[in-house]
View 1 (cartoon, rainbow, N blue to C red):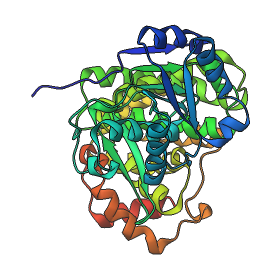
View 2: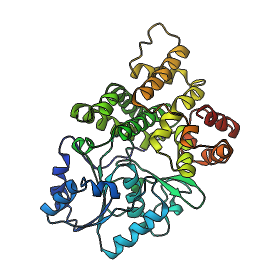
View 3: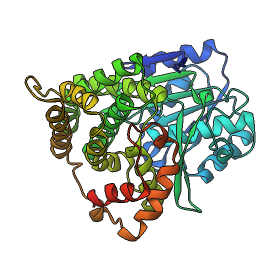
View 4: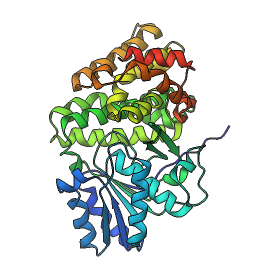
Length: 383
């Protein structure tokens, strides 16, 4: 069986990487950008870091700042209207996962037509490349800036669904750690645990390869060593840089190996309760990992070693459990060890979410198959 590996053709990484963007846009003869972002990033003037560079290189732009924390189908439709009104020839997303996912939807539908939901009934369904997309990232977690995934909220039926399409791959990615210094502690923690979830789920995925294994393990190592520092000492650029590389490598892993039940369950929590995605992943990760480790002890023993656990002399079963305990300790250290019930989740909605989770594309590559009742039980363990 052959494997396909998707990567953006260019990524600008490190301190002040955004200053390298202007000449690349000029070289591609882009004329006018639709900047897709959220109102908070506009209000705190972080978006100015981008617009100053565009103005310096005589590139026009229009700003769509209507993206919600869990981007909706309507956000994509509204962005498409502005794109056409302003006659933009490319899209720039600025922010974290929500602006990136919204921008992907806008860019894909702009050239392929229809509705974003049309591209969720399988994988790689678009016929044409999307409008050129540049992603400028301000968080270290989702990796939405470089993956073939986008997560969209259908407000009508309270679901979130993944769209997986090779044409989502951006033209240029910018990961500038200077843009991440302003992230609050809670967001740094949630996005960091999101990145850890990406790496672990990709490593144990049924679609993993030696390439995705390598970057997943390195991502786990970097997150374990640097997340707590990034949370509590946000101006530590060494830790921010390490987290930026870690989340990117985790994105490389899951963009090509996909994910598992943690994400398919977290998507439902976002759809029904509009909860923070990374926080949901952090809460669910130890529960789902214990479920998966029953049939995958060697892989979870590798996770333990990557998290710095001395597994010498341990059985594979003990090493796997030690790794899951290490996940729990890191989550507690950064403040994401919370309970779903405290976030407003109700038991009467668990079966509805479990059914939708099993229909989520991320469930296809989970290493151990679950029944609907077992997914409900995993939700209950996190309550």
